[in-house]
Amino acid sequence: MTRQSQSNPISTQIRTHWGNKPCLSENPDQSGHSLRHDPDLQNAPASSHAIRSLQVTCMLVLTMSISACDRTNEPELETRDKPDVSQQDPAGSFLTADGEEALELPESVRENLGVTFRKAESRAVRRTVRVPGAFELTPEARRSYHATLPGRVELHVKQLQHVNADDLLARIDSPDWTRLRHAGVEAEGEIRLAEARIALADAARRETQLQIAFNQKRIADLEAAGTRKVEIEAQLEQDKNKLPRLEAELNARKVELDEAREHFDSQLSVMASVTGLPVEALRKSTDTGSPLWRTSLRIEVRATSDGIVDQLHVTQGGWAAAGGALLVTTDPSALRFHAHAPQTDIGRFRSGQPGRVISPRSVAAGDGGADITGQIHVGFRAHPDERTIPLLLEPNDLPGWAKPGVSTFLEVTVDGDEEPVAAIPHEAVVRDGLSRVVFRRHGKNHIVRVEPRLGMSDGQWVEVIEGVKVGDEVMLNGAYTLNLAQSNRPQAPPGYHYHADGSLHKDH
Image 1 (cartoon, rainbow, N blue to C red):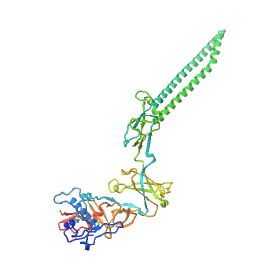
Image 2 (cartoon, rainbow, N blue to C red):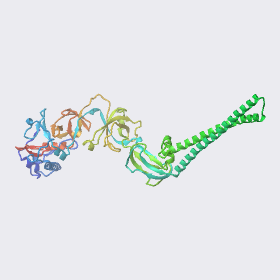
Image 3 (cartoon, rainbow, N blue to C red):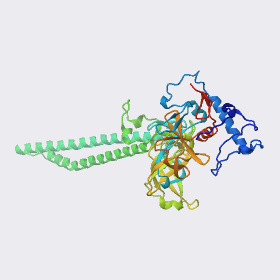
Image 4 (cartoon, rainbow, N blue to C red):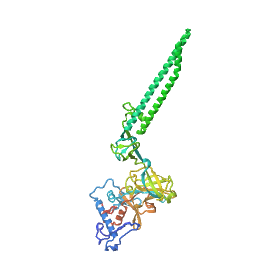
């Protein structure tokens, strides 16, 4: 759509006096109607709409003064799109293969107007239900570390420090740990003492057995010689009677050894519970040749998983009581999205339905604003006061903007027969009189002004029946300002052309 004016185009853009050409602006109000100034009221007192129109025009003048360029004094960038010269008209635009006019929108203009783009997506707009919610940590995200024994704490981390599994968090100098280690030494000594007693009892038993065998041989030799010796026979009987008692004593010593070993193992289990280390690790020899439990003078508190030090409950060098909290670590990646849906829609949701957490508006306009997908889980308990039911989504992947407490919306595709179609954000559509306009990106530095055929809208996304395809980029921020500049732009004088933002440039 082209509007022409017979007045000087440059002077038309910089006039600000009420008696001159009235400012023409289109600014939709809350109801979506266009507000226009009547040209017959150019000499009337300024109204609130005229003031708004003047402000927009002044903003455009400032933008044009910043982004204006002299093609004769500035070399053409090597990265600029090279449209077909045979199709390029004097105004600097060109016709696409479909016969649409592609307007130039250089990078400097995009930066000055804050222009952002977003791709058209395939969406089932009619089957999409949107509910508010926020990211929260899962119950497994937090890990608390406590003092197992009372003692003086030496911290080795700072708040908000990232830690990995097995990193040293703190050391505790505890008198009870010293006594526990001493009990382990005593238990280990009991094992050695029991082993020595077993060796002594076994030696006495074997000595008696040898004495019995020796006396039996002597008695046999005497009988072969036809003689007897009563003393030897009496000693033999005495040794035989003593042998069961010696064997019983040996068994008793073995029982004592088993008890000593169980006592030592019990002491190691207690130390393992205090330190959080497995018994095998405590038994492992260190560089000095002694086991770890003997050489560990202090209790070491180590991280059991990756995370960030969230809270510190003790000061450096402070005394911690038994069971007292030391610190808390949090895994920031253990997130889920918790949304609240009205109970009236309870029949539309079921666990396993695909869901999408839409990125906040401020992030979606730039890089890294990708939405988050996953499957929803419908909670089993509703809120009686708020009359809502919980919907939980476990993300398949987490972008950088997803953090605990970030509020946004959850989109759930409910069951239905409607197929997904091309859809664009609702804010990409601007009104120009009775028409609805969308600016579609063409290449890197050009845009095409189209009047698409739109369908159903859910308030955030609108179906596109014709004019935009899935994957096309449409303008978000800057669309209204750009449309206003196009609407108010007069015909360029000979030798000049307009950029898409309405700024006048000399041909080259």
